[in-house]
Amino acid sequence: MTDPVVTLFGDGWGMTLWCDWTVDALALGSSSPDLEDRVWDLVGMSIVGVETRAGVGPVFALSAGHELALVEGDDDEPWVMHLPGLILTEGIRGASWG
Picture 1 (cartoon, rainbow, N blue to C red):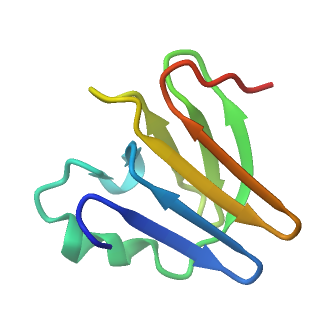
Picture 2: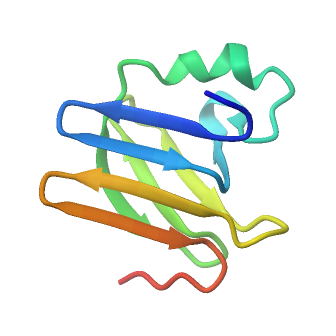
């Protein structure tokens, strides 16, 4: 974590978040006052799925049963995900998924 950017990664994938995000089950998000200490709670988790929901950007299912939701903030801040042979990038506002 380098405020305000969070980078998550594992074997064969990586994700960098400039946008607002939340993991509700952990009461953790980009605006958490203790984010630099608590972001370590995500260590060891993998992204195992993704879906769309009304009112938010993509919602990533994490291996621990939690969900990482990308939410619209004040700016159209981007996120980038690297997968083998594929790079996904998008701003939250106006993003389309399906």
